[in-house]
Length: 239
Image (tube, rainbow, N blue to C red; front, top):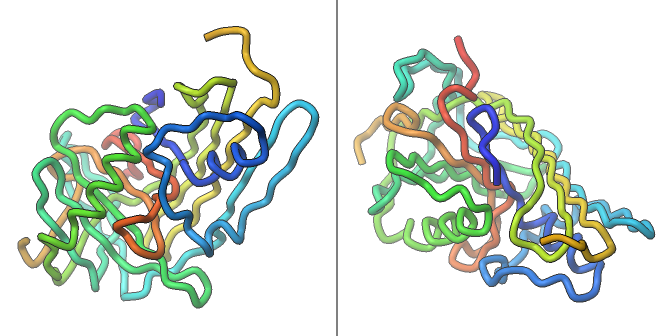
């Protein structure tokens, strides 16, 4: 992934859907996980002689518990718009503070995840997916319920090529997170031909470091995360 204006994003779900339409596309083992059933049901796939495009538009996702707008001071000293959520659980893990909150897709329950990462983070897309999967797996060993969780409001529009594959692959990710809920549009386009080149009670995430967010469903020990987005304070919605 490339860091652009404080944002780096990667979606393994539409990547796998697109790759499955083509022969001999080699994907890293980090993507070998359970696909999110209800999110995959939203996928549209277009196949042409030149490329394959897979796209998921979640539509409006709504928080399962009350939420409200609440500003806070980010780790870089700027005042940013936040979303205060109830019904969240938070775990302090070795390399991140991770939070999980329920969000609904029509009548289907999904999970929205947020991780504050004060230290350096490898922004390779596949490594970030591996981190998200590890955080989900370790979460239940340390999680505690909190009264409120505040996370940065997000308005992300990101596009970049995916590195590390054997053919040109481009992704676009549009993500909005606010007090109304969230909406994510993720698209992966893979060229068909081979290339010729190589816990306190009130928790605020974003006061001490950048924030990663993603979505999942099903067994979090086996789930493939959807739309993993890394954001720095300069990319968050200001006051």
